[in-house]
Length: 300
Image (cartoon, rainbow, N blue to C red; front, side):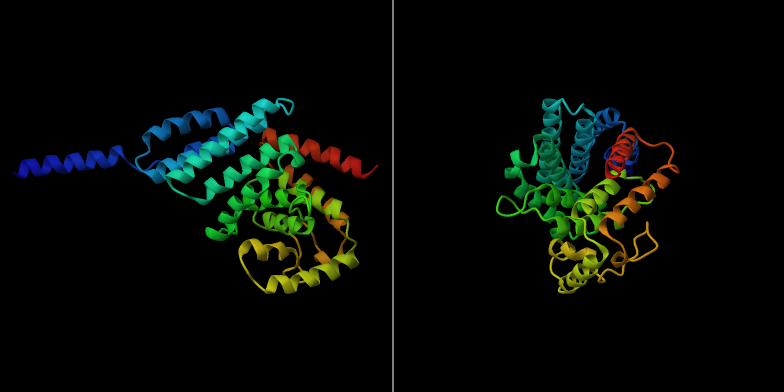
């Protein structure tokens, strides 16, 4: 009996080793390095090794994320290829939610739909906007995640790119507040030039002078203080202290500069910051090149 007990224990230990929790460190590093093909290959292998629904869900949302990366690498003229990649990403996210609902699956589902919409054109993809907002609302309200910079970026893009009433629910002021939250939750070890570009574009387009900013941000502060859900409250994040915030790229408060002064300041800061990053990833360099063209257009 004693021998049988030892054999059973060995079997249990062997089983626990066989079904050890998946380690995503290596595949996440592949993704961060934009080695998307290699990342996808490894994730597909890991899917077959997942021992629980939760583990498979973790694999699936990462497949959704890498599908978006692969789509972004395609030539912008290859719309069919991009559509296919983003649709695949959406499907992986749906599978992840079905296996074990999690915030990242909802986020990357919305991100893939959003990129599909950007490829199609906002006016040709209005029907997807409501579902996208619902998914992002799950992230910030139901899962109560208010520190994930990617989600705030996508929310900002959604509100900025959509037309306003009566066609849709676009709102430039809310977009800027969401983008400010995205900027305030940037991870220090990543460059994220797209965030800086989006923030600068939104400010340049709004074009408030310093006096108007001071008045409007003071109004926003009362709405911020009322509270509400994360989605509702962060619409007024820009005015949370009446314009007395000093952004990390500035030496003065928000109410002492115009929108366009801040936009120029943001991109100048990014340009200096990019020089300290090695290596600059291919997608980051593409965005930096677009920013150079953008700044040149502002000087005309």
